[in-house]
Amino acid sequence: MLYFPCSNHYGSSSLLALLGIQTWRFLGPLKIGDTIHLEVEIVEKEQTSKPDRGIVYFKRKMLNQRGEVVQEGTTPMLIRRK
Image (tube, rainbow, N blue to C red; front, side):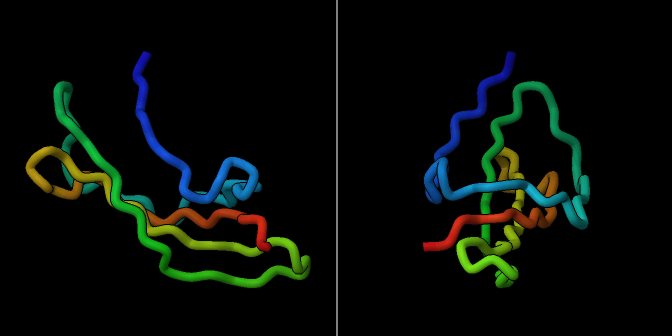
């Protein structure tokens, strides 16, 4: 079993749903023994009809130990608003 340690800066109760995966691209090989990390950028946000939640679009880049982008894509997520 693989374990990917990660932190959720939004708090576990803020994330309501993953709404899909958009424009995901595989740009290079990911090999056994590679060390990877993920860079995440907020690229867009939308209000919803419910005032207590909104949609946030995250652009994600997976990089290997040489700094090469091996995967990238955008994931819209439903987030609880304050």
